[in-house]
Amino acid sequence: MQRTARLLAKIKDGAAKLSSDELAVAVWPSAVGKRLANRTGPLKLYGTKLVVDVEDAVWQHQLTTLAPQILAKIKQIAGPGVIEALEFRVGAPRRLPHTAIDSAGEDADGISDPIFRLLYIASRAKSEKEDKQRMRISA
Image 1 (cartoon, rainbow, N blue to C red):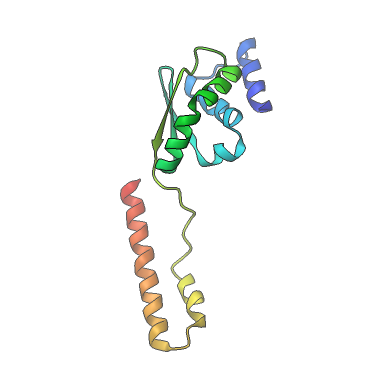
Image 2: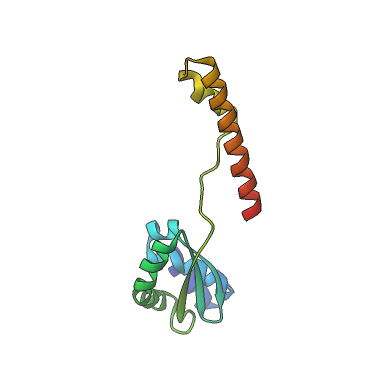
């Protein structure tokens, strides 16, 4: 909240010029809180409508029902006329970085049967390769 207040003070003083998109990005964490800001994010400001990325349809539904409260908080921070509407869109699933394929050998150390161990390593490598291809396609 304090960082946003400093940005807004600079804007009022004329010391800094922020675009509407930059203002929306700066205001979002203060308006929704740190935990929710970590799971969502403003994508783009179209006129006065802020489009926000969410993880899935459940988040989309929940945040749509909370939109009036979120908008009130945004207007309180940024002032009226900057953001007048919210749209929540389901984005690509966020994933943690994959570990290297070599880590499959470490996981397989507990498998005593050599054939099952090799099958596990091959299966894990294939699965990780397919995941990488899916990530390239969705990007």
